[in-house]
Length: 219
Image (cartoon, rainbow, N blue to C red; front, top):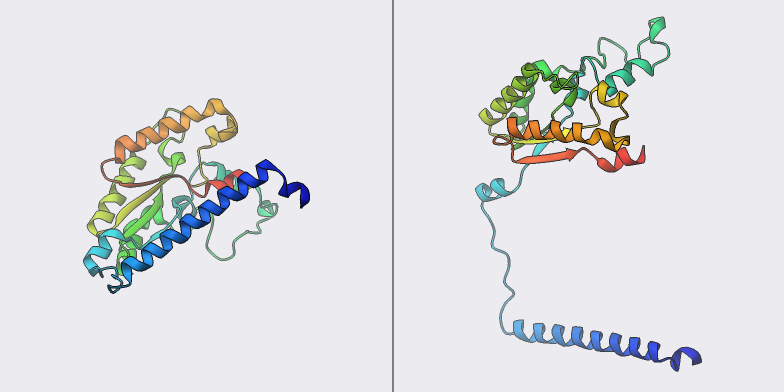
């Protein structure tokens, strides 16, 4: 303590702290004096209509998790990681399968309507790169049109679209090239995003580039 007490640096630091505390106390004192003679103003309540325009309540899905696909990194993983598949033992019991799930791709109208019936005002979904570009440079316009049909359905039910460009899933050709682990592959993803903006940019206000990016970084 003796050394610290005689240090010019320590003395200067203490002087600065003392000055800062004094300023804070003076501001608090002036604030109390300025409000002591008048009742505290409470925030003005907002109407339900105004709240609904500022606050979105919704549901969120991954299209792959609800539909599967014919070829993506996760479809390959799901088909290859279960060691007893060749023996006829399924990883999922009953009639469900990872290839189909609940079939959102074909039953999107029903699911979107049910979301609206729940009182939702927003619908979050993923745009599946593997469906859009199953082979590098080959665009499946039927898949693009299906997404437009989904957006039409959301608009008809008053749901704000919230699109995720990458929900852990990408084409197998991108995976085979090294995926995001190689910098030279990034332009392919950027070009996919640009296409989505051109196709859907006027219809979607809310975008997420990556779903849970920290989870992917930890893997």
